[in-house]
Image (cartoon, rainbow, N blue to C red; front, side):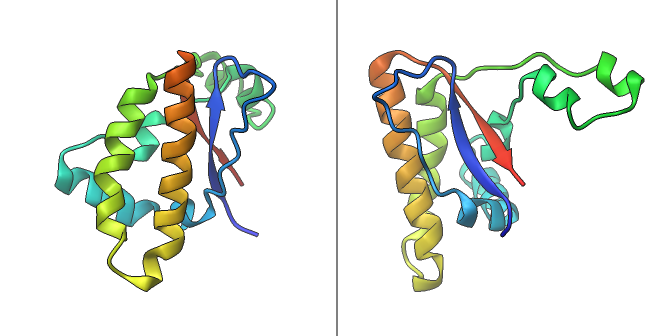
Amino acid sequence: MGAAYYIIAEHKPEEMDLFVNGKALARADQRLASAARKLGVRELLDFFSQDPEEAAEFVEDPEVLKNLPPEEWFAPADGLKTVRALLPEFLTSPEDAAIADDLREFEGVLVRLEEAGLRWHLSVDF
């Protein structure tokens, strides 16, 4: 099935749809990171965070559990800067259509979060 990137909102109104496919982004993570560095914007994975209690479900080492970072939230504008910079890089090749589609989905969700005044972070589903 493969990994997928998705968006978590700090507080999500029930009527707000946050679904993004995110599978193409996860498959292209190295290309996206390289493009972000080239463009001088934050990498998508810079926006990754997780609730330490959720992370603890996957960690057995007590030392690691003690040092899990707190969940971090980001302004949608910061994510939009990255997504909007990356999008043109993946519009020219038909092989990159799924990446461009995922970036457009991310852009749409981040715009809605910005309009609602809600923060977000990236999560990964394995």
